Image (cartoon, rainbow, N blue to C red; front, side):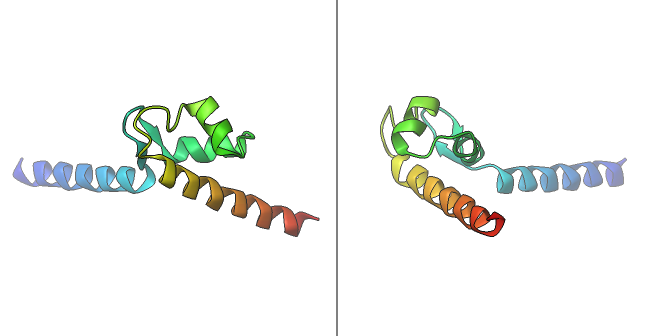
Length: 87
């Protein structure tokens, strides 16, 4: 029983760690994650104004704006690099 409990605890911790690595909350006020921001950019939100319109990011305290802009820029660069190879 102890071995099973230890295994379950270790497995749970590994899953939690993997989940936390894959998910970063950018806006704590509204619970917006980096994954949601990247998905919005993939769906056509290419400016902070469009992100704010779609996800309401930066509409509360505004502390998430700098990180959101960084994620937006990184994603736009990634899209631009991919499109350059397609043409």
